[in-house]
Length: 70
Picture (cartoon, one colour):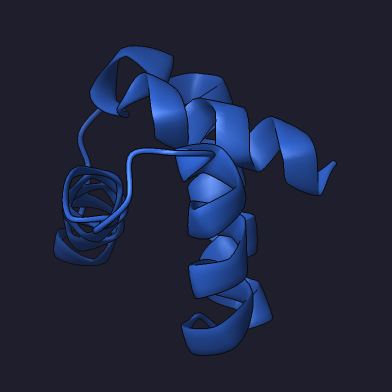
């Protein structure tokens, strides 16, 4: 699967969010909170679709956060 710039950027941003959480406690919950506050619903939906298609491209904490969102 070839990713366009937007898809690559979403993956990069999500992984950076996971890596830059100031507290390492409950990182998936922090990611959910961050994305709810700063990401649009279409961005979150696109990331969920990418996670289904390319789970190895995302940090495990991002995958856990997406699972929490439902």
